[in-house]
Image (cartoon, rainbow, N blue to C red; front, top):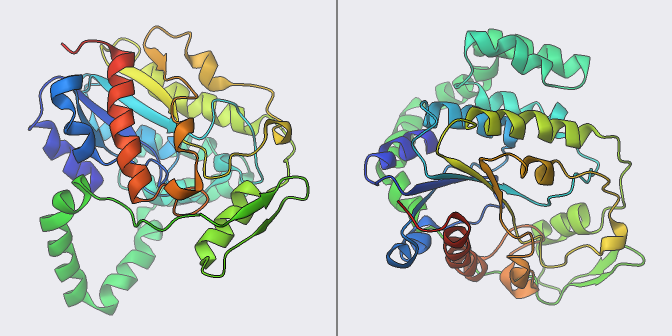
Length: 318
């Protein structure tokens, strides 16, 4: 749906078109960015998909921009310019197979499978990419459980997806009242805090430092590198930007990062870095709905700030 929506949108905008990629933390409301087009000269769109990662973004971009020349800039959003590992391993996240399955070609099967870390997941990825029916099986079974409803939902989504997402703002729930004790890595919550607020705080803000193995840096160099290389001879700029980290940014002394692949990419002639402190003013409890996602007010402020700052980074439009 996102690919279809953005491919259609390309025909409605001129050459000064910018697309942002990210996961659910992206938080961009294109309509608010584009309200500033008379000042910035740029139009903004979003091809972000919740739960995705740079591996999925590469395959999205390959089909969204086959000539690698349609956009003035590609925005790649990250949580940090440092390669700090937590206890997750995106290089072994098999969800990437399910996100990219419709974009994978026969010629991708081996390289896609080998991009995973462990032998077990490599085999899962190889088998699924080669025999796509294995990946679609659960979806097909879900369709058979109620075909009439499924077809109705598809029609509704196709009809209203653009209008429902172009100006979407998340709810205005806040993280006010949450208190963090960084010495003990514990938190106290107000009585009305929901399960999502508690869970994201414990998983993201309160996690202990993880061992730094180099896997995350290698993963970033591989997949961000593929995107950067794809646009190496294109007039399109690749712009990295660090999102607001959350309502309670972790103290620097908890970081164990030793490398920064993002800063390494900035040496490439087609890569730009947005000031990593550009959105720190948004890192406040009243602007986040949980420990990782901006709320409605936060998304409004971020979208307007994004349009202004990216306009300044890129300079005058064509």
